[in-house]
Image (cartoon, rainbow, N blue to C red; front, side, top):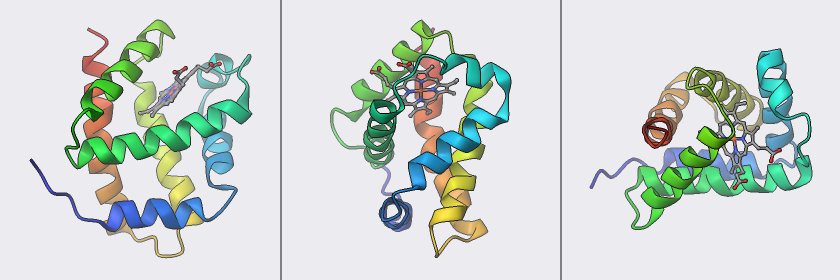
Length: 132
Ligand code: HEM
């Protein structure tokens, strides 16, 4: 089991202190491409934002190798296959997340961003693999 450092988790909780963190993420993500925005045209964002908060935590737990989290990430991957989300869109998702973190974590650094990317990529790879 890998033991990733705590700094990504600490950064997540600093970001969460700001009510605007998840709002910023969706603003950035929806602006990346009309192909992304169109997917969310019927979305209840109040619920969606809560679910994202929850799934970010699940991804961080998966990164730490916690029991039971792999199934959750795979479920999320299958759900996104049903939603017909192209694998390329995950790169836009991750870029938007990193920009939102930069905006909301007062202790953001380029090195921290790299750690976030590695941690999130583990779940993204699992989600894309669960599509097959
Ligand atoms: C690792 C990255 C991602 C995470 C953690 C994530 C998280 C979530 C979660 C938790 C849900 C709710 C699932 C449910 O209904 O049970 C969801 C729904 C959705 N996601 Fe993602 N997502 C990711 C990537 C993407 C990408 C790249 C797109 C591309 C546009 C996308 C589009 C959607 C859409 C359209 C929905 C359904 C919204 C609705 O119900 O109207 N997601 N996502």
